[in-house]
Image (cartoon, rainbow over all chains, first blue to last red; front, side, top):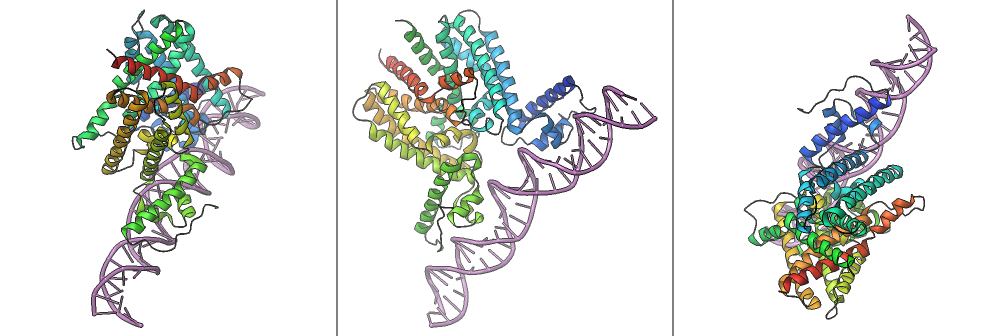
Length: 220
Length: 220
DNA sequence: TCTTTATATGACTGCCGGTCATTTATATAA
DNA sequence: TTATATAAATGACCGGCAGTCATATAAAGA
């Protein structure tokens, strides 16, 4: 219970409530990084945050809405980190590598991205979902602008690149989300299968193919 | 309860047990197609199959192991359907379109593929998991051979294509796995975002870019 | 100091996946 | 044909889950 954060006073003003919500989110993220999505329980989170389960539901609609919020925050955080590392113009391979490295460095972003549509977005109210989509739209626009400069492609193509990188990231990091099978006990054929789906090279190889494809389409 | 299948006699021989397992799987698949992954419950499945929850666990390790089996069967079924529609040589765009169409036509395959690593493979025994990987390896080999002919590329490149198409399929069909937001009530910007992630064109566009990229690498 | 407000509580509900001692159908032996 | 052995099937049971709600109470305002 090292991450226990006792919350004493009641939150009355809007600012205090926002502050409390944010504190809970911080505890939740640490807890999530420890145990992962499936083992995460609202009762445990309450215990760690120093309050009671019912109270959590004053601050979040559902478990999924809490995770949707964590996802949004991790998206923005990663987006800034990625753009911060894009120094001037880059070959598409370097662009892809930086994108992959920064995404993986954020322990929250990829696991939630992978679960977004088919787990998290269910059990969230429509207005909340719409708000979340707007956050996404904004980030895509910001990323497209930075990518347009980095890759020296028109904005329309850069936007296509950004959207497609998201798609590819989800597919390529799939193997990392399985149970850890690093044992030497596995049959050789299975080991080499796992090796061939190593997410880093898989992502970068195909990112380059896609970016070069998009670039070629831009020219006449 | 229309899909109720009364099971009367006990299964004693190995064949009878295999037969019963298969019957349960058929009921499970129909049930899954109705309610989806999250709402699927073992107790309901038992009721529909005309037996009791405890009995299911004589035939399946866990809920996830049951889904892993459904996934394997849907993979083989789709693989055959896809190969069956590959007539001679094809432009990469047609290849990608046929792949996408046959995958989507099988209602079970894509939803389970998307959940494979980060949901289904947890809570399954290692030996069972290894067996499943072998099924996958076999299907990749079969698909690579057929793809080598259809795309007129060497087998090594065809194998790369097949593996990459799987990655892309997962990423591109993500949007289809979210809650249905077909309402006209949505803000225009969100509607156009959804439209821009329409999975069919998204998949085909990028499949072509990747296949052509792989083909170009094979050249010199 | 008293009243009002709404945050925080914790007991509660219904459901889940999974287990296991017991029952009982069935194959085999007598 | 009947008795016995085997293991398939049962259903009561377990702990834990997300989410709810009447109640208690801390704190702001009169």
